[in-house]
Image 1: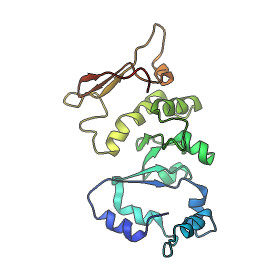
Image 2: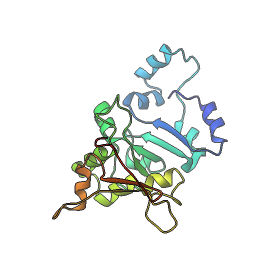
Image 3: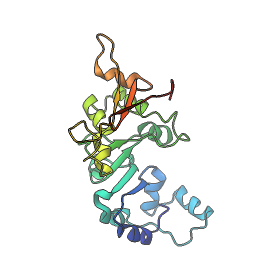
Image 4: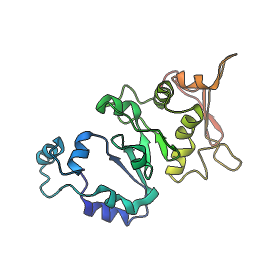
Length: 207
């Protein structure tokens, strides 16, 4: 709602990935529908005089899968399935009282934290634990939105995102105690080891 449609048009001509926050607040939805909202007050404050509501779907359509949209929690799953989405569940819940609809295929969803101004911390494991505890996704789905899904969204899935021959060997190690099941890794604050390109990096005691 702060980007002029002519700028979207110019950006769509570039062969680059584009990231934007989208459909996050109820006010944003009202503004796009031409209804009164606090977005008008914001635009007046920053002296936007020519930016009027427009069809954001039409403006973003030329980007295809080059667009990564953060949030989209104001839409239902049928409406968001065409976007690559950086899902920030705790931030969305804190700010707007609702998170993204995860009732369908999650292949185009990655996990994010948003900023420290809208979240308790920036620990991605805490986001994953939040989803597990809500019962939104299975452990496999959660691992996918932490790994291969965002790698695909960033066009890096040929080198990272999964453990396969010829790939980058970027992975985390979590040690399990006797009797523990894999889902307990989401209760940890940090992994026990980090490997990048097959080489172990040592972490400080806390993240």
